[in-house]
Amino acid sequence: MANIFRKLPSVNQLLESPQLKQMVQTVNHSVVADGVRSFLDDLREQVSTESGEVTIPTPSEIADKIANWLKTEEKPYLRPVINGTGIILHTGLGRAPLANSAIESVQKISEGYASVEVDVRTGERGQRIKSVEKLLCELTGAEAAAVVNNNAAATMIALSAMAQGKEVIVSRGQLIEIGGSYRLPDVMECSGAKLREVGTTNKTHLFDYERAINEETGALLKVHPSNFEVVGFTKTVTTKEMVALASEHGLPVIDDVGSGALIDFAEFGLMDESVVSQSIKDGADIVLFSGDKLIGGPQCGIIIGKKKYINTILSNPLMRAMRVDKMTLAALSATLLIYRDESRARTEIPILRMLSMPRENLKLRAEKVVTQLSHLTEFMTCEPVEADSMLGGGSLPTQKLSTWCVALTPNDHSVDRLAAGLRNGEASVIGRVQKDKYFLDMRTVQPSQDACLVESIESYCGDFKAEAE
Image (cartoon, rainbow, N blue to C red; front, side, top):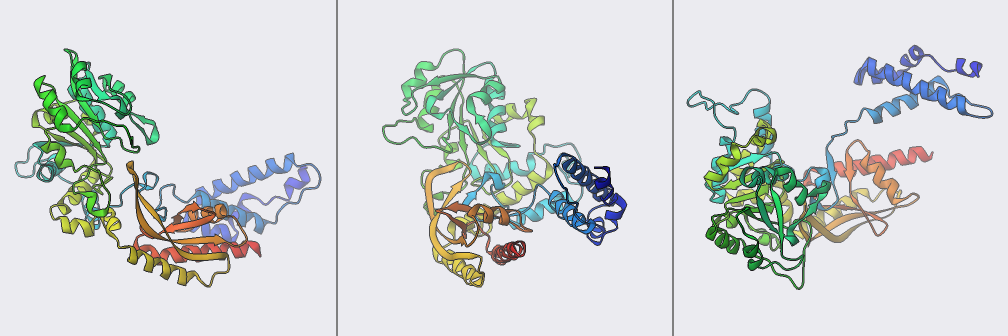
């Protein structure tokens, strides 16, 4: 066994190989050296456990394996992705892509210092929320606003500030659980508020809320069902009805509208998604929603409503733990500025652009990509196919949008191998497997990415062919 180990090249010998010399230039000498030592240790372990005759790879072969392994290991975990899934607000892929002006604003604000908490007019300390509060109030009709790091945080801090130690009445049909094990009862418990369930899963009446109100009641809470729908024999209480009842008892109404929309999504064929400003018009004292879903901005939780309640939330100790940074504020401010002109928003906000993209345009792009891939022999079929896209992000789970996809059927290997190969390529491509085909939805592939998509598929086929040889 000792003789076999002597056949292994030394660390210095491997570092002098052309493959690893190139890696040293692109990565770092110590990183590559550590990688070589780790690889050799694993190889020694493997050799020592083998029974029978053992073949040691040549130094060049070992260098190749180490170089390929390091290339994989050194790829950043967080990297750009071409989204071919057809899910517009894909949580796993970062939800809404930002508008160009928001990206430019983030770059401008983040490359140096910024007036985050300094009022440049007076030179005195200010509140960071001021950079977006005016715009939020202008677009929604609210008296005041606050921003935290996501909508779960918005829910928690609103409950903590307005109803800690008190009962919060909520319909049993709205006790939701969404992605990442977010459960409303757990969030309420963490906030210090006490859950008071009323009604049934499918039916809650106004009298259910009325009967539950007592001296321990702190607020009435209405929650958007998010990623599920109850249909059939149902009954829910409107925001207006809740506000009227709460007013009689001097109680606030907190309306968690979930995804949040600043314009009516019915124009895109997506029904029943309420506009945030309507909740304010209906009299809700506090309205909570996400910044990175239907608005198409950065991840954050937005809180709007009556000034006295917003002031209470801003003074809550949790506010510092949940506050957002200058880059989030820059992106949100730039996004909100676009919404001052709704026609501009439809063309500049990426998710609105995707939603309004004509089917004929999607079909032409799919056909063009198929034509560009027609020379590849690695696919049994490569064709444009009609399919459905989804909004995603917990919004309107049962509603779909007609779309066109590029559908690939591999020739001599599985769809799963194709999916893994494209996902791990130089430009990561993620689609969906459907009916033993690999679908790439052109609605969520940005038009500027079409050429890169073709190159990625061609590169995958080249690598596959090289492995087969």
